[in-house]
Length: 298
Image (cartoon, rainbow, N blue to C red; front, side):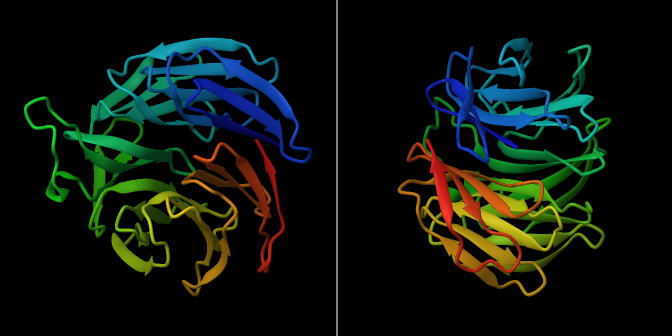
């Protein structure tokens, strides 16, 4: 298994998860890399940057395959569809764009009001996209924003035409991270409140709220079996939660900077975290684990 992470130094790094060995260093973006994702078959990597471009890379050879241009501001999120045929990108120009991964053409593009899209993800079957909104764009005439200027909603869209399907409201401040459950029936969201909320999509209602972080939530993810949620925060901690009980299972405290991104390994036994401290850490956190060991690569 491999890990990919983007950096403020404009590069992407790929590591072997088992050994921590660096496999690739990808260079080509002109500004910081905000997002990166493997294709479902592991043969490609998509990256989104503050340079307003999406780049697709050969994940084996480490060569740039092509660049997608269409955004007018920094890109905050990228993802491949579950079948690998489409790429989704979203960012600070308030746009969500869906691309054909083969022809490299835009399939659909839509604007999320006047708000920055801070997080976005495909549903497990690829028919929907969820977005979290990170705030209103500042203007030259009004560079200062109040809390009321921030959109607190989560939106779900039809990925085939950009039609808005539903809106979920409940966070008091901006939503920084969103993710579908593996069965596509639930969503998890992390906000600046700082709370984590779990939502039922059929009823369009909040199921419960997870509280414990003391800083803004920056990243959330469901485990592959849907039974656990992990969350990262600018309080420098990672927490693991049991979905059935809503109880915190683990609190991981080795990072010395803000936790910027999290992901479970495909088997659900490990959590990978990146941080503003310049490290990527791998945590042993399988089901029933309450005192995980950890290793770090940098």
